[in-house]
Image 1 (cartoon, rainbow over the protein chains, first blue to last red):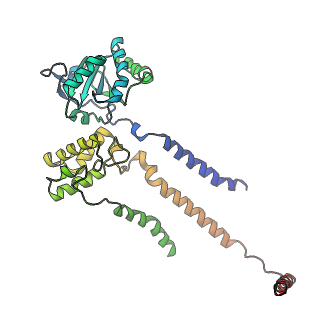
Image 2 (tube, chains in turn green, red):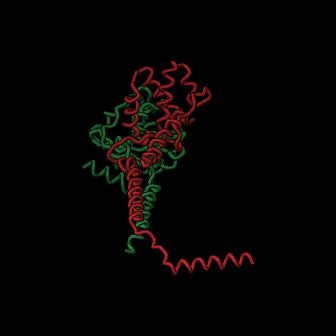
Image 3 (cartoon, chains in turn blue, brown):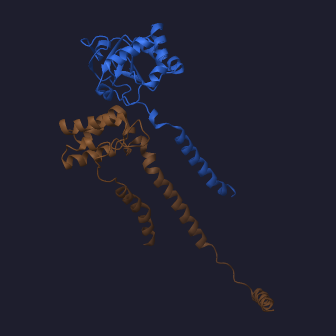
Length: 175
Length: 170
């Protein structure tokens, strides 16, 4: 009979747990709807040579990282040394998407801090960015041999994410 | 009958609230004002209505219509382009955006399997509460009425009351 009086407490605890977990979750971290979908196609001139065109299909057949960056982006500086180190380790080719930037600043930025990219596509008006669902630079995509997006990192990469998520995933996709 | 009155209070009024919560007419000084200026009034209204329902992903709970952020400005330009130049419907535009940014861009969560609790949870809780209340009231009604006082007890009460009255007068 005493149990009856515990019921409101039990209900309260259940609701509190639900709400507490809800508070902890960041709604921005919901997985991108683009995961496991083909990477949107694009055709953009490269940063190194404006006359050269880079398309999504150029990378078919290999696993690659697509890193969205800009010279005006502060957190891009933060993750940049990691990208440089990763490119030196020669694990996976990194391609860049220079997002809403200008050639001069972007080139200067790479000259200053090192260039980890095999190639950089320039998305001056941010149209390709919209197709990729970019809203916070930097963002990094893992794209497989068939051009399917397998992972999306919103915000700067960290050693932890690189070591425990991206590199194992790349290794697995490379087969 | 009175029961239904309460049901109305708890269901219809909150629904009406949504209608009141609409925001005022577009202001040319708004972030979106310049974009809307060359649209027909009907189109401008559609644009406002649609962008008010879309979340600016880089700000805290601001709509694409209101936000001064760079991201929102880009999105407004793109939405205007889709609406005016490509002649896309509101549904096509929202689908386009959801495919890229996910459901999080919608302020109104869609009714789908992972949002069932969100949509119906509160009603279920209210129903549980109402059921508990009903059962409680019924039980109390059925409980035997308090027993009458015996003649001796009534005497005692009277005596006590008189006694107190006397004290007060004194």
